[in-house]
Length: 248
Image 1 (tube, rainbow, N blue to C red):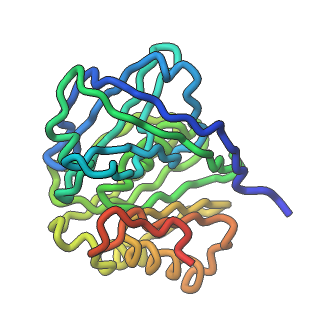
Image 2: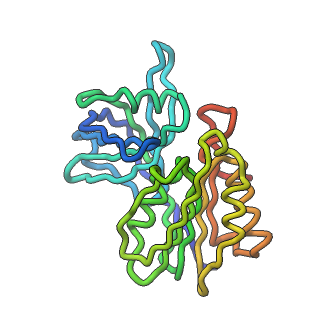
C-alpha cells in the first residue's frame, strides 16, 4: 500500500527563546518572532507540526499550549508563531503583552507528519486557528499542483494572502468568532465545492465538532479515500486548552 503520510520523530528538546518582535497581521492574528541560539538544531518537516508553549499562570504550574511553527530559520536562529486572538486564554494573553526581550519556553516539535508529494490538488479547510498551518502548507507546495483553501474568519479584514508556486484558489467565509464552533458555515461551503479532477489530499483543522463534521462529509458523502485525508480538532468548545487531534 502506498505510504501517504510519513511520520518522523525528533529529539524532544525545550528551548528558552527571546521575543524579537511582535506584529499585528490582522485584527484577530498576532505574529511573534522568537530568536535564540537554541534554535540551531530546530527541525520541523511538516506544515502542521506543533510546538508546545509553556506559559506561567500567576505563580501556578505552567500550562502548555500547542502552536504551529509558521516559519523558522535555523541559520538565523528565528521561529515565527502566529496567534489567533479568539479567546482570553494564557497563550493569547502572553502574545498580546509580549515585548522584545521577553522570554518563552518552547518544546518540540516532538515529530512531523509529512504528506507524500503525489497529489494533483490539495484542499485545506479551517478556521482562524488553522491559518498558520494552512498558510505554511500553501507556501510550501510546488508548481504544477492546485492549492484550494476554504477558511472561516470574522470579517474581510482578517483574510490573508499567501505566496506559492502552486495555483491558488482561495475562498473565505465571514462569521462571528463566537460562532466558530458551528459546523454549518464551513460544512455548507464544503458541500458546494467543485473539486478538480485527479488525485487530491484533504486537510481539515478547526473546532473539534466542526472538523469532525467536515471529515464525515468527505469520507461518507464524497467517498474520499481515508488515507488521503487528515483532520484535527485544534480546539474544543468549552474545554480550554483541549484538542482532539485524532477525531476518533
